[in-house]
Image (cartoon, rainbow, N blue to C red; front, side, top):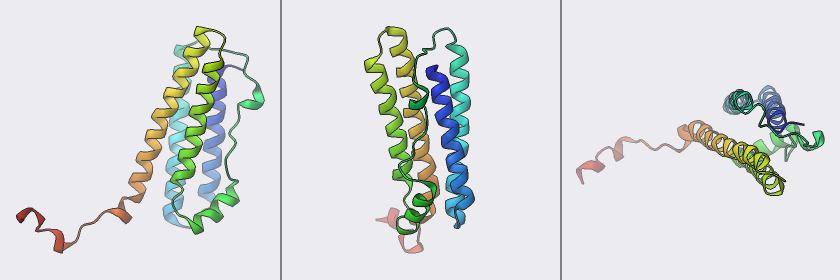
Length: 159
């Protein structure tokens, strides 16, 4: 399997996973978070498709089809149950992205030729950019709960 096809397949499976979580979630905040994560995965998939077109002919094949699948750390039901105990699902999404980065880096380290290593390193860099985006999404969703603005603090500039 082509490395870009592998990455695109993983992104699509991850998007479907987040869409399922969005449908199952009861809280509007969680629905919004999962919706944004799914949209981010779709955007990332589109970016990988464009990258694949630019790298056509330089793409590496030979990956095991079984290795190219999204394997969430928790099932959708387990994750939603975890939501009730710990609303900070950010860690889960980050762990999945970090695992993808390690996956591509390990493949790159074991790659037999320069072209293969280059393609895999590009994919790892893409995953790092995507991880940054996920961190920004979480920050956006969490801001209403962590932002402090009270009238009694409005005079701090006078000190």
